[in-house]
Image (cartoon, rainbow, N blue to C red; front, side, top):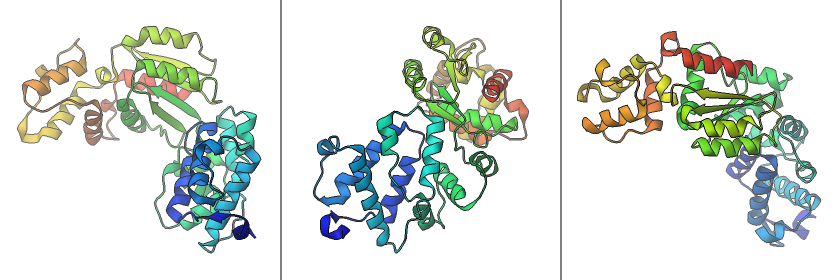
Length: 331
């Protein structure tokens, strides 16, 4: 009956997996659902053909109907039947994390065969959101107990908005040294790409999420901090790195170890090379330039630090970093 009315190009396993992956990432539901559904319908509904513009004119009930047909038809080619037991629980978790409008709630009623698609990937290593779904579908544990046991990060409990990728790479590692696991406790770090973007992201997130937001800013972002402070909710926190940037609160011995490990016999950093009371990034840029070490890049430097971190060495964590992690922990 379905084949007589519609002409559908079935989704393969990779496409099915990517769809449920994108639907369960930490993104605003009204954006991710429409984006994923629009692409599926435009690509896999061959007749009647529906363009992006025509999709925008469809009501939510019609979109859900088409999506369910495409998923059902695709799984017929995989000889799989869809039990549809998990999708309502996935929606409930999104509703706990996000503030969702009525139109999007209708869109989220589409019966997505999460458990069936996860089953098709039973022998594969999955990203954290899909590993959470896997455990969600095969155990009787609560979502929080799944996260605590399997360190899946999902469901999200807190968001950390930071200026850059350095914090995203290193904060979870420093937290582990202090016996606090971000993934186990549902802490997600979002690197904004600059202090002004942090402000934009916070002002957007604050009206769209139900979980606490911790904003981490460099010392030069005081005007941005003032803007955020006026909108700060009681559940949120604002942390200003008084000494400068995140690189300024890394222990000198850790920086020395990371650079010497990276360049081995080509260059050896000494204590006198790291100048106190100066901007650490500018200091390192100058060291790299003078010694012909190439361009200093924050992301690469963060990975260099990560390479030499010891989970048993609490001296690798400065007092300022300990304070930041404690603020996140108690938010």
